[in-house]
Length: 173
Ligand SMILES: [Cu+2]
Image (cartoon, helix red, strand yellow):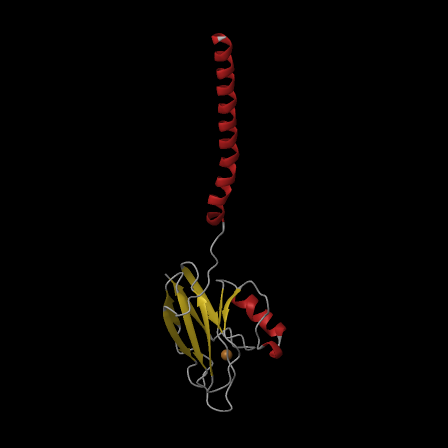
């Protein structure tokens, strides 16, 4: 009798251990993906409600030029860029567009193709990083953006014929 009961007990023990290990194995895979999910998603670069920095750039009066040939921003910070067309009434329209380095000519040509209806802004062009609207003399427009990775980014006016001379450089540090 004793031997039999020992055999039964050890059998029961073996079964209970198997159940415990099965339960543990099932629990483990559920926990792992839940813990990994948030880390796998890359946080999108959304501008903050309050900009870290406000930059003012205007036209050099009635000249086909910006009054700032360069300005500096901090990579990853939220920047508010205010562009003012300082031309007098009857002067030229202008915009300010930050583009990827080396793409000034391509973007300027695409802007001409986009036409006046689009404010000389090529829609969906991947080389355009930031753009204001086309601004009439005496008017301003502003745009809020997250400063890109460290590097130099040219800015141009894409009104036809302006980009070659109406330009500057945004330094992201
Ligand atoms: Cu212009």
